[in-house]
Length: 480
Image 1 (cartoon, rainbow, N blue to C red):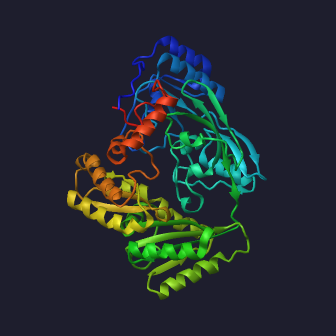
Image 2: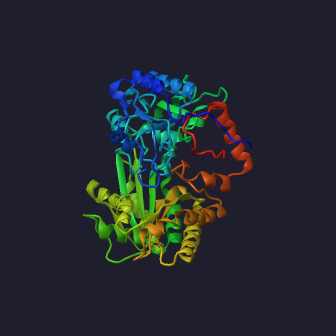
Image 3: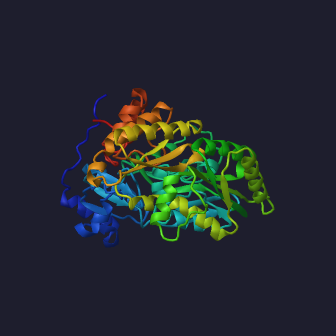
């Protein structure tokens, strides 16, 4: 396979930058090094990029004009939303950053068709609010929802806590508007739920991390707004017990099961120790915990009775050690805060190596056991902080440095430990990246775990849609 080469400019011609600034105007132009800095860093600090300027178009037509100028000049284009990614996918290596943050319009809401059409720069929480104002639900939910943008969510095929019921981001999309690598605009903003007329092109751009084009707008599915919700935190003796409980809840609750989140004892200990206002809801410690949420659009749906009956049956079988069923919305929020505070709490324990993997649900206990043993053998005393979206097999297998270890020396082991964990996941039929994507961080893993045929197909798509390699070069697909 020959490399995908292009003659991208190392130093942009000043006339090209002048042309770009003329398109977006003073409000959409940043070239001051101090103001550019926030657009260059990946939030974990693993990558820092460079770029000639940040352009912030206000319309799809401006995005198209910017991309057309860059394509003709051979200047790399790095799309960026909220810059909340965790694999370096939005970190530039030269060229210009195209920030979509000015494109924040809700273009249309159709309650009867249950669709909402939005621009790429809409913040996820604002999209959720707009859906709620229309009496509906947009269910994508993740920790960064107050700052991430829907364009980035779609470009990375974001997951989050409700995948078990609603699917990943791509499952919520009906149509897209995309600026292609040559500056043309593909208007695929269809609100149809049935359209069997050839290739479903939108799926090429969802999860492509901006390497094939820039998503500028989307038609998204809306769902009935929940009228009743019930949440419980369940204490269990093991990961295996959590898997058994999931099976029972999934069978009995069916489509009202909205989330099933898992976290380990160490996760809870870190939260209690380091997050203000967080307390252990149980009198004694347990090895595993499951946060279960049921929700329904039917106001008379007896979810509490369903949940309590399920838990009582599990108690009788010896599968559950203890449980707290939230008695109010505030208590439910406090239980969710335990789960959501884990990454914040882990920071206080020193350096941490992050892993985002998935395995078939039936293999989650085996993965946690094998991966824990493997990393401890590699770095004795390493502390496993395992949590995640148990209902879809996605585990965030985070690792805190041994007590008293040197932070820098521990973080220098990131690539070696990442390989160990990914090997365990792959051996169980899993993926080295469940929801964070590939970006820069995991391009080498693409070579290791993807078949030659699969990589050839991806490279062929990239060449077909971006022959000059202008769109986010050096990300996702390895050519060198």
